[in-house]
Length: 51
Ligand code: SF4
Image 1 (cartoon, rainbow, N blue to C red):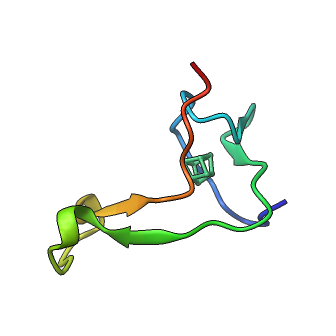
Image 2 (cartoon, rainbow, N blue to C red; image 1 turned 120 degrees about the vertical axis):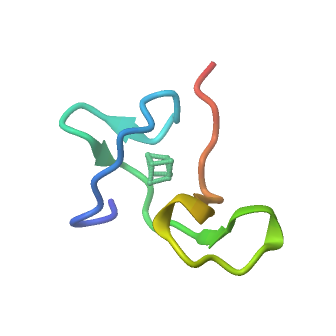
């Protein structure tokens, strides 16, 4: 379990109540391969839809 990771993406299968992430590790990438200059331009590549 990733420690000290808070995440609001509750449509992810790793998401848990309390805004926790149950993935053993996460991989964060630039959004659309463009060098990020703010947090909104980053993405969690570990995300998997629970739907
Ligand atoms: S894998 Fe990424 S998107 Fe999914 S709960 Fe963890 S931090 Fe959030």
